Amino acid sequence: MPSLPRIRTRRAGLPPHAVESVERPRLAELHSDGLTWIHLERPSVEEAQQLGSRFGWHALDIEDVMSRRERPKIDVYTEEEATGYLFAVLHFPVYNTSVGRLDAGELDVFLGPDYLVTLPNADLKPVTRLFQRCYENQELRHNLFSRGSGRLLYEVLDDLYDYCFPILDKIGGKLRQIDEEIDEVMPRAKERVRDIHKVKQEIISYRKIVRPQRPTLRQLERQIERFLPEELELYFDDIVDANERIWDHLDNYKEVVEALEDTNESLISHQQNDILYVLTIFSVVMLPLTFITGFFGMNVHFPGFESVHGFAATIALMAVIVVGMLGFFRYKRWL
Image (cartoon, rainbow, N blue to C red; front, side, top):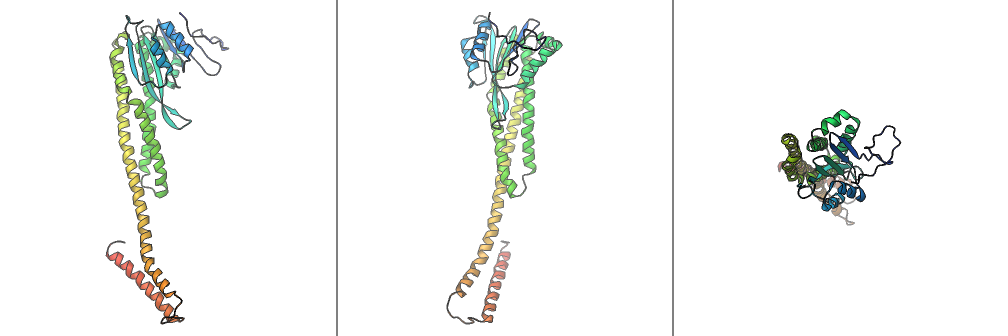
């Protein structure tokens, strides 16, 4: 059977089952206790086809691996249909630094009785780190591989979900910071609109990743049994519980961010109303004064024209009007 292409490396003492490329590590295969783990990030069409020929995968599964728009799903092939394996498409959040948002990183998994193949389309660091640890630590590799392919898949998923919770903590920290600053002055309130929008988009993106995966994990929990050499249903139930906890957190964060958004909009509205209230008071008070100055500013003769007494009387009248209007507003409890 054809195997993955080996890339020579200058690293001394590198085992033949580890593969590295010139640009970045492309660790290929690990073997121990009759189990093989292949981890390859962003496989090419040729690599996917070689793996498919090697393990007897269905052609449609190869197409799903190369497609980048797959929803989470589980396909199970019994030994009568092919060589007997499980194909899973799972999504996990990955922060895209170039655009500053959460994207869905896809992990394609092929699970057989004696092999596990993980093919992520993004840099899923927990999987790569676990693979690297198994490569460097022979005792860890023996402990994980000796328990079968199903237990190894659990360890991969467990590390991935442990990686998901710190992202939730960051979102929760942003929400707490916004909540603490919610009553600050107007300029900061406008900036909070952008902050709330960013957090809201992160929550929406995270929910879009987790929502379709909930039934998929429950199906995986049911279908994984024949790949487990020991009673490990409890372990995969823990994975389902972790996914449900993430969903519960996202539900809570969704309610919190919507409440903060409503509160911030109400705060901005009240602040704008206060400004308009003050401006209205000024406009109403200045209106009769403008009328008086305009009336007596006409180029006609009237009693007291060109006299100090007439000017003093005009000023006194304006002062009386201002005091009277302010007193009236106070009486009506408008001030």
